Length: 113
Image (cartoon, rainbow, N blue to C red; front, side, top):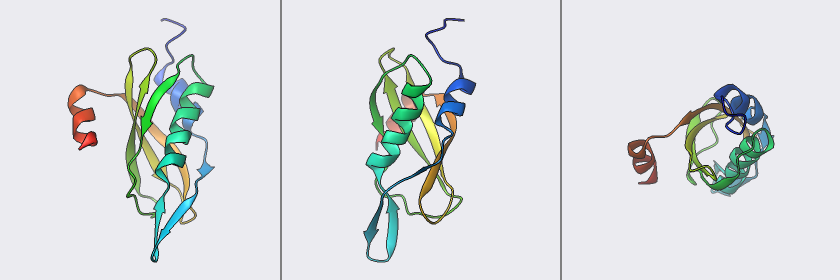
């Protein structure tokens, strides 16, 4: 195994840190701040691997609902692309990455639009 390529378990443990994100108020609707979620994804991968995240993208229209999940994508310096599933832990917007898997081209296109 190449030591510069992190295992799925290493990345998940790294990214499984709950972080409170800034919430945007849209009327009475709370939404997850996509930039904060992207920072969670980037920080989790970079702090526990030798990878550098070139780009992280999370949806901007996710309502804060405890127990809900959404997917983000990350592109790394090693040309790897990953899909990270993020869980909303509570109505305060605490997040945790709960799954990470290599992304296929079809998955990335479907998440992009």
